[in-house]
Length: 515
Ligand code: B12
Ligand code: SF4
Image (cartoon, rainbow, N blue to C red):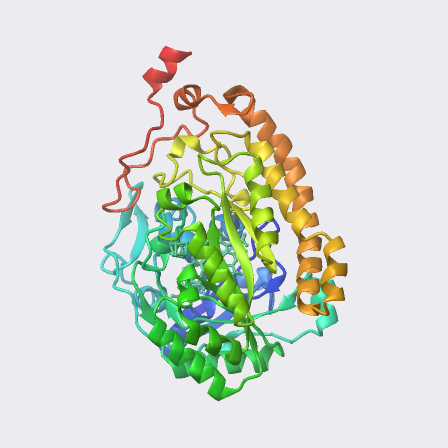
């Protein structure tokens, strides 16, 4: 029997630097398209596009939601409310945080779909329709008798079909003025030419979510996706969701040639690594296909840090790549990471100096993140200072830096970002006739002011949390180890086969001995 399904994409509670891009934050449309093809009756609600009809959701058999760290509290609230209103509704969670932390997400959903949703979600729907258990379905986690069970991982899916935009029930495009003044941003299209990231960077969770490796999307479906979204949204501005658009140079060239041939009149931004600097043909094709900005993971401006975080690039190779992208007529937007043990309050300013020296069109600074419910990766879990996931969007400091107080590091990050995107720079960019960059600075500045107001409160909260742990700017490591903020041990049902050799959360006996 077909299930009546609603798939929901909720924005995060706190503003972040990409809030102005009005688009689904996760690919619920891909999941909905697969469920429709399997014969279910599906509606997709994207908060930024067709809105979420909260009151009507309890009339569905199944409600699925995408979960990131930063929107988890909103999904939890929605699911609690739906459960109270209609106990029989089936609540399914998927998306990146459901993949990383299924035990945590299983506390709020009946079934957690890990990794890609297209095949697993359909199998879950079919099982629900038959009244069967999900125990035999690969790629799901669920609670039974007080314990979370994780079924085996499902192999990644290959090519998927172009997304069905008719699923966006009730979507009425708004004028650009209503988008800007009513929603604080502009519709942005998105599409992916590939999935997966084969790189081992320690600080990034992408290689654990999208899966190590590389899967190409079928090119015709990709171009169809762009065309359909352009026509529906009336936007020509696209964000490509590939973890790294140029991972496979041959596929990348084929995609770019197809975009040039389709002549869609769209502009694109994509995430890239510095390797693209060694691909002059790709850079040339990008320019011809309508690429304006490449978003480059620069991360750090010293080689020791880059080596330690296994980024597999050097400062010199980055600088050379930037030069070549600019020579090809492309703007470079830099992404930097803050919070490594080498970092001080001056690190954020050093990113701005680097960005200025190399004429970047924009920059974003992300604070190193570890998750309270997961084993640490770059830092152990006992280095976490903020446990409220609403702050986990990379802009707020959530770990204890070794050589700076958390509140001071967060202030330094915002000061640097606000300085780089300050309106005084508008004059220079306007004088050069660069409207696009002037708009970017101005939009970032407005958004950063919003985020700064949140940060001021957060800095006060951090100052209280950090007070006992610092002498001057130095973290008292032994004290923190003895009395960490995160005290819960990792649950035994964390995720099958994933153990943390570095989980140093202080045993109670050690804490007592030092108190
Ligand atoms: C592109 C991208 C964006 C785009 C989103 C555009 C879009 N529609 O994808 C933009 C730039 C807007 C963005 C913003 C942010 N992002 Co982002 N983003 C990504 C990136 C690189 C790719 C996402 C993607 O499209 N993947 C391809 C599609 C097919 O996968 P998907 O969206 O995950 O959906 C599949 C499955 O997750 C699952 N699924 C998804 N939803 C659901 C729902 C149900 C019910 C089911 C069953 C299944 C299911 O099925 C889908 C199809 O297979 C990922 C990294 C990655 N590789 O996933 C980071 C990533 C998801 N982002 C992340 C973050 C932190 C952010 C920001 C907070 C950053 C910021 N400060 O601006 C914001 C916040 C977004 C928000 N929630 O408000 C983190 C999330 C970490 C976490 N633990 O949750 C990631 C993992 C990056 C990282 N290295 O840590 N992001
Ligand atoms: S930082 Fe970039 S290259 Fe490294 S794992 Fe994340 S997506 Fe891959």
